[in-house]
Amino acid sequence: MKKNYPLYKVERFYDFKEMMDIAVRETPDRAALRYKSRGTVKDVTYAELERRTDALGSALASLGYRDCHFAILSENSYKWILTYIMILKGEGVVVPIDKELSDDEAVNLINMGDAKVLFFSNAKKKTVEQNRDRLKGVELFVNLDDHTDGEWYRSLYRLTEQGDVLVNAGYSDYLNASNRRDDMKMIVFTSGTTGVAKGVMLSLRNMTSMVYYGLQMITVFTVGLSVLPYHHTYEAICDILPSLHKHCTICVNENLRAVSENLKLYKPDYIMLVPVFVEFFYNAIWKKAEKAGKAAALRNLIKTSNALRRAGIDMRRKLFANIHEGFGGNIKMVVTGGAPIREELGEFFDSVGINLMNGYGITECSPMLAVNRNEYSDYRTVGLPVPCTEVRIEDPDEAGDGEVVARGETVMLGYYKNPEATAEVMRGGWFHTGDIGHFNSDGRLVITGRKKNLIVLKNGKNVYPEEIEEYLLSSPLIAEVVVYGERDGSGQETGLLAEIYPDPDRTKDMTDKEKEEAIRADVKKIIEPHASYKHINSIVLRDREFDKTTSKKIKRDYTR
Image (tube, rainbow, N blue to C red; front, side, top):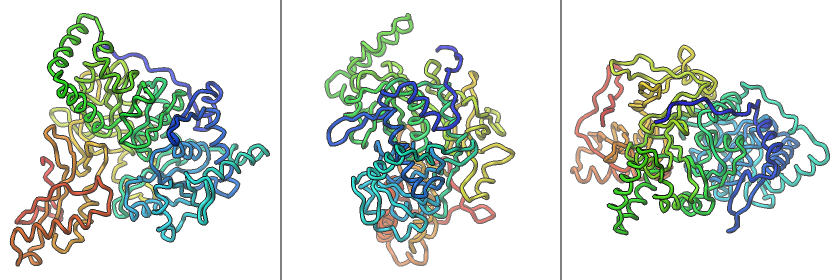
């Protein structure tokens, strides 16, 4: 284990326009983005990205859309990033929407985010067209994929062409955009239902501080594969923006099925993932070894390699070349966040020469609060706090565990139009995460507990059980329900379990089998329209009411 070392030097910048100007000045011809289009790999240089964002922003400004809210409803794509950077460089606010949400949920969030402009892909065209009359505040619809304008929408391609003409003619309204440090730049929703959703307001200061100070803690290299959904702050802020500031090449992974193929195609040297992907690679490696009858040999090779390392000889990249080739051959670092990683995974990837670094954060903190460092990493912890944010443990118990609270430059402005919810988590200037943890003897943060209600699935998806319970209680057969995370053998939450107390009056004439079948049918019907990660995997029926507090609130079993 190496000792901690000085922070990396990072060039300071005021806003994202300046950040991109620096990149264009220093590396104009380097590929900023790399993506596949009709089977061909295409590059967009930093100079081209600058020109296209300026053109798009100028076209929109000329139409009167300069400092409004812009929503994006699309799968990962080069044009998603183009649109995102255009908004950040200007005076607007970006409102990313999860493409996996149901139509009702997406409409709710677009309306709650006060979007005037909605960017959408062809994959979401039908959803938008069928719900246009419900999107009360949207004045301009922009299709990211079509090359021509439609009857009710504009084409991103045509807008960019028109903007190019404007810029060449000297139009400068967008180019002269200015932002104050505490201006809101992003609204990220934490849930998809009107009753529970909270829009996290992130400021220019929040986001630029995350890039600047985050890169002081952990550096990126030359080529990264961008895998995680862009509407998540982990990917949008912790991967895309630092990569651009370091003038790296971001390779767009178009869908999850293409990850293995794209690793070999783009040959990245870093990648950011959630633990479910790490588990997938780990299991695939062992499955391949077992199928070839080489699992025992791999275990022995790991033992030999670790013995050599203890003697000061590092042969990992050579000894485990086949594993590295599965990641493209150049991989140096895998950063994980969004859920805990098992110690077994950290040990394995360290043994084969791939630095698996764990971090911890929450959307309300832009999102990273702590992270391990390239040369000072302990996968049993989530690392050291980011320099610009103070993290402490509130009301620790005898073991040192208490609630993780934070204050500083990455802590959100608050929840959009929701001062009550803001006041609940911002107390005395500190943001209360609801997570339980402690600092070890090296000053690194260890997370030991969950938020009481929040379910963080193995794939990194956050599920608010109250939202699912609200849906299920619409069934006349259900009197009470509590939704839990269903855990696998390693203790990680992989799906949702609903524990249900049936309505005694409506089910009194049913047999146990009839009762279970009827409730299962209701649950399936109610949940089916919602995002797949909100579906119920298992149902448990109980024969008595849940225990309740004096205020008649159900007492949840957090040991489940």
